[in-house]
Image (cartoon, rainbow, N blue to C red; front, side, top):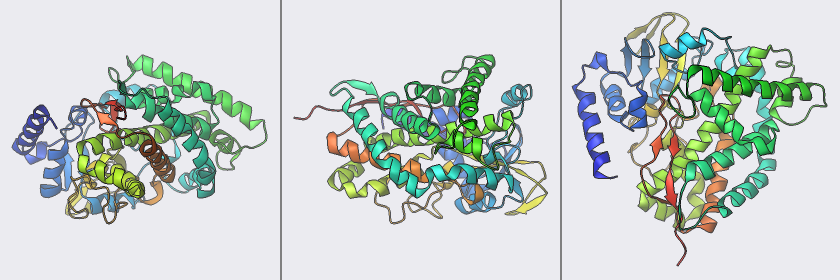
Length: 423
């Protein structure tokens, strides 16, 4: 870490501890894009683990910042419901969305509808299908890595992370393979606010997202009139719980599957390169013992936390850890904070690829909404690193990354690297 980064971290810490406790507001995308949110979460975990922010660009909300408290909220869907959405939406975004139809998806549903719809798509990420997909993912990972320039700077996010996840997602949807980067583009359109990522304005966002849904509607129309096949669109078109869903619900599920299948894995692939470069002793350890790859993958998923939070809405007044959460209140589970809770994870700010229990993390969530594709994410990360270690002496970071401007997607816009020539 350069001197500038150390100064910024020091400044962020001083600011977080100077603020009156009730004024703390972790939901600031500028903090995340500057990697400067950590001191706020540290203070909240210590002084106010169930904390109320009365005013923010997202309206009022509760922050849950300790590991065990987050798990308690995540596994209590009767009191903490997903039905009104799973992310903090800015007041500006809420005003824009009010002009458009609601697009429900199974992640923003409670049982029984949630369970029925999730069950429809889950076979695509079942162990037997992952086993079938693994050689295809490996072949593609190898082709991507073999096409990279050696000895020249390039953007790892663009040439590797986006490309592998777009290929895998196109396969899951049986989406036209040559158009796979549209999936990446649409994911970025859905998750960014105007002025960030590819989004120029709210109108631009709405137009591009509509184009996405129109393309998937065509795929639905083709699959619903054909014999069932083993892809997500056909599963939705023929599934008992999903074949009669209306267009808005279909769109909501498509948006969920695109973002879930794209952002999380892509940002963890980038995060692994960043983390290993920032912790060279761990990189040395990995090169010396590639059997540590699965453990390194889990540690990266914890350390990166590709989705910083999930939101719930209280269905009733509820006493929680000495605070009264009111019916209708927004409750934010900050996974990014829970993954750094020293009460549960030893030395949590350190990146240690051979931890004793590397899968002790909350990046996939808990309870009924636990990430349906978590094993596929781990598989892609494991395969790409097996292939990297076979080919390259190292992948070297040449400058700090540009980070995503978001309080939800915790990721990288660019990651400049060089693969050195072998001597």
